[in-house]
Length: 556
Image (cartoon, rainbow, N blue to C red):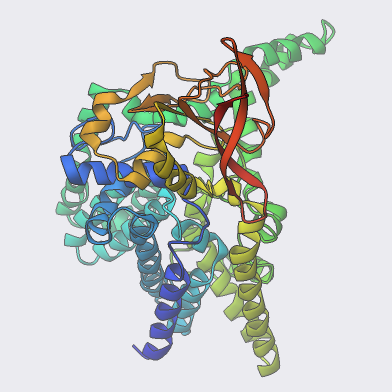
């Protein structure tokens, strides 16, 4: 390897950026991270998840039936480091580093016939290393970081397998693991595989055994098919609730559109433009295009926390010209595998486009690999055309300041502006409850700001078998697919924490969210005048109240 020293520096930087203060940043532990972590802990201790299912292939969790691979990946780190934030995020940060190594070798394959092959591979790895988008997803336990890695690994092994057929089995196995990682891969992985088989059909079919070797790896999916047969919720989980096809008002909108056309408009044209196929097709295309918008990619990123970093987009502004240049020369010069990269770009946002929450940084995360192949190629073509040393130095200076600004936003702006969305304060809340709860008959908690039961389980390392015995599950599933745990042990969590409806007793400890319960309240209850007695508060980093912990005292 000609540039081994530079490659090692990039890997060191990737490790540092992904592991530095990993247990503290992002601030707080997101509810999905806590759920995956506790389920991994439960499986480690008992072989069963929080609902008592034996080595499940879908985690029922909050009613979303999470794909299981991420939880299983956490088991070794929880075994080594115990149940905490670092252990939960460790495998994802590690996969983030492995992704940098993978994209380097994949770039070597993509640019195999280019004279600047190694430089292009190093640039691609460097850009992924410092990517805001990639850092956001791999510094937290987000499923898409695992999914994107296994999809890219599947592509790499398939391309190598055309020469060394034994690798085709590992390629299909990698795609299978992507499917076990994230629901979206049940579409994205399929599209990538179809693209590979179509584009490289001649090389693939040269040897008869290739077909068997490739599809033998999908035997790993047989347990999943069996699980889907036993419980259809395993197929899509909560995904069906966020799908555009779940909208029950479509027929009403089509009827309204046909009515507005009036009797003077051609019935044939009315039916052509106002039918479900045209309606959904136009909606999907619109949502797909949103993932390539300037504001989404370069200025604002995802508007939904925790996938949003205030003040910065998913890509750096300086990436923009190189992305355009790269696309132009990728197509003009017909770079090796350029059709694959373009089809990868096409398929990556499709899953997100099928939902009503677009554009989405997590569901379109598979864009990240093809984007950086193109950006690296665009930069090299730009330097070849405008190759003065001063220009090159200026480019690297801009990238340095871009990374510095991102790190400022990540470590200083997220805690101040979106710590609430990361469920900051749950650990502090649980610690305070533990100190007080033995003095009370019940602990009644607000459900606002994220399901509190999972944090009570996580931070107390609560015995799973004891939890199963006392758990109370609300059978109602809301319109977005979320379930609800009403409580366990002495913890009571009403679906709606409305203070005027809550049972009031001097024997209870209460935990409310933000200002939903006032500091000063006094009313007669069963012949006694009771008032709120604030025992403690948890604050967000910006000084605002996150939780109030209080009991009730009789007024003399």
